[in-house]
Image (cartoon, rainbow, N blue to C red; front, side):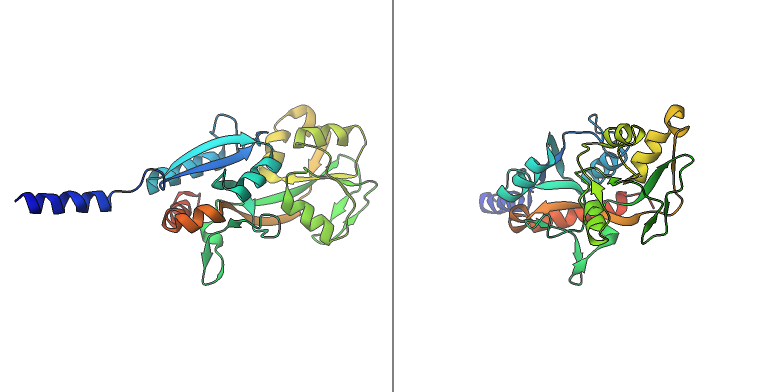
Length: 242
């Protein structure tokens, strides 16, 4: 009996998940991005990740830092994950994305987001999905949105990425310091809920881009705990809105 009991206890110890392995340190932008991510962790993306982590039995430990710091932390292993990034391996070379059959797996991304073009009401700025017309200044874009910056560069569109947030860019735009604004639709709709702003600015119907955003996991974490990362990505696929 003592031998059988000892074997049973050893089995339980071996089968029990490791607390350290079943948690991830998630670095988030020090600036909130309502309604996607907020300081109180009740944004759309916050809720998806918290729900998925609960389903997968994984603890997410959030902390905030400037995005440049988050990228360094991902590289050196201080952070285990970044919560909302498009598939841009060149920009986050030390991170893993969910894969299936050797390619990135959009079904296990956190959320699909459109970005929109904003113009001042009464102006003739248009976007046809490939190029602008009627543009009389640079496109204002947040310096943290790597995907939009990449698309603007590839299309040789002049831009100004000195604004640190959409409110910053909208203030510059209304002061005449740009020809258009490009930003994520969720943030645009949140901003245009202000009647004073909606009276002066409008979003074009043609989206600037449509892209899936992922929970990117640090190489070092994935190498040590691949099963935890895969379990969380699987849970995200079930937790995201259909």
